[in-house]
Image 1 (cartoon, one colour):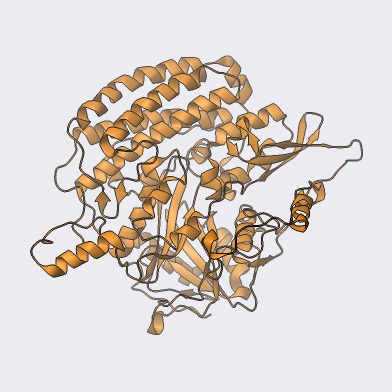
Image 2: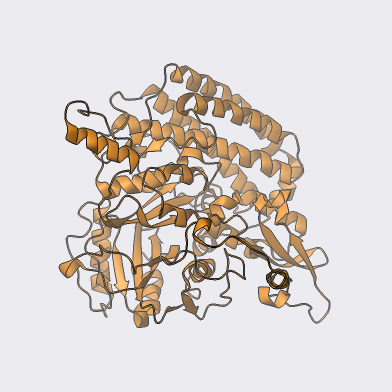
Length: 601
């Protein structure tokens, strides 16, 4: 496709200058112009390429363009066959039955872009980009598993979320969304035999050899039900004695179809589902979802609501990091800290419950703001916690960080450098533990984070110990942010008066029938979002989390893609653990800080 540059793109983006600079560099440096720049994407530049130009174009973006796009941030797909609104006139998107979407991130530009590849249903095959970005391996397997898209040249294209015996591809529009849409489950003797055969472990299918020239290898399953794997997660180990030759992660045991469920839920009834993705992150999960919808609908959130959101997110960042801190120490053999830290987490949940009515999963953020205003006495509870917590953190430093045995177990273990982290899609504390001072709250501020004073903790060891230290220091920085929220909480409304907010503002509902009807419809069916596509990333507890949402002009999503940080983080386990001992792998798994709902969705 020949290059057609639309200068009006990104007129609504807060990062318009970075986007326009990228477009100018692309025009100047890419001589073939074998792309089409989609003009109606206010969230980030979107480029369509043909299949024959995909690999050269992506290599150019990663290796040749000035200030390159180092990271493959996400890779997903869209079943376009039932979509009605795909632009019009000269803005209409290329014909496509299925679209493969590559999200790229340039750290030097502080810019996300997406590259799209159109595929006809008759030939669902794209070239694999795993030779360009290592972390494309799992993303392409996921797209094959859930959409049936082949990736030519992929080293091991097999199911990753669904069982190997599953029939069909769940994220296609013709695949059922509820069990009630199909016949009741039955288990015949033949089906049971097939299922049992599929469970047989065959090392060759996992890319492992049974023996070397000098010895036979032992194979060990760590998980999927084991306290050290932090959920239903399996690691198939290839061992030479106690030394790890290979460690292959196996995920999908906790897959619940959160993206499929988004296609059947109304916009506001989907909010509680987001809470269960990173189930330790609470309202932090609501944030990228509601921010994406607010960007799509052009909703301006009042200052008070933004500060409340920041305060609640940082409370949950502390709660999540406390769970990590305690279980990290526990996994390397220190039993006491986790009990103390869970006490502090309970104090936090007491505050969260008093404000929201919920604890772990309050589902409290709303499109346009939050569910209700802060209750009377909220400031007293917050202040008491802020005064109490620093001394506890100093105690934990003595118990955990300064513990010589813990240091010996974790220093120099599971090491990777900055370049390797970016290659594998590592974000958040895992990236900052390589010495890279990059935090989305500073680089691309949202919710008014640019109005707060806080530092970005970094350490440069890139090992288990430094991944722990980064999170400990982040707790202190979160306390700083919360204190600023406490001391500078603005007045005003806690929710926008935009007509698409949920629940809608009552306004004149008792004065005229039209407003009453609008209020009733928004409360029951939910708002009708304008057609379009949007993606909004945030700095979540475990790294970058974003929702890529496509609206087809209805009361629910046409497609929702959830990019979570834990998915690429687990993919790096083989690189981090080869040549080490099984006990070291336990420390590595603990240092990653993941939950399987965040991985599998």
